[in-house]
Image 1: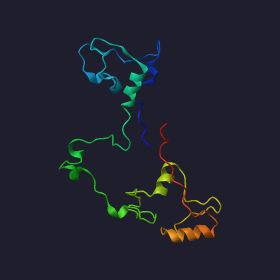
Image 2: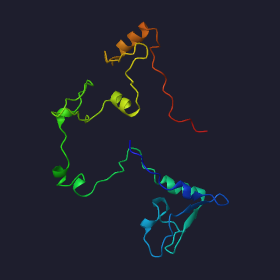
Image 3: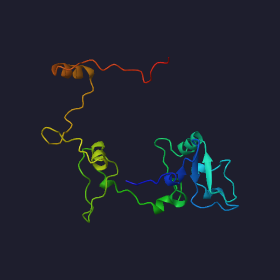
Image 4: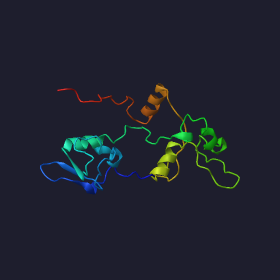
Length: 186
């Protein structure tokens, strides 16, 4: 898994007095430099000048607001490609390798075929259980009692069949009540 560096150096953040937050720059900002010298969350603030500034001081909420702006929205791709690797580049097909469809894993979970050299290529898509095993090291299909792998016997979607099976097992046949997503206003 890729490790992402923090948005700023924590050892340069101090709380000097009265609850303010002080961020010390790594080096003095020389006169006449552009904004790229200043860390991203600290750009565009009134306290920053191109005159040899060594630090900036924030109110706590303003500092948190600057840091919160660095958190990307959920499921937003943060890596963008330019030039021939850009998605709409006419040369992209020339430089990006093609996916060999014969190496994709099968839907039943059986592994992909091996290449002629004997090396197995990673599958194009992973099943849920395979991802859990790969990322968390958990074998979610392993039965705790008999230590064998579970397998799908039947996929039942018809309500009368589900009610009959639950009644036979002595379980409640009514679905659980659906609660409001939020508490009522007071």
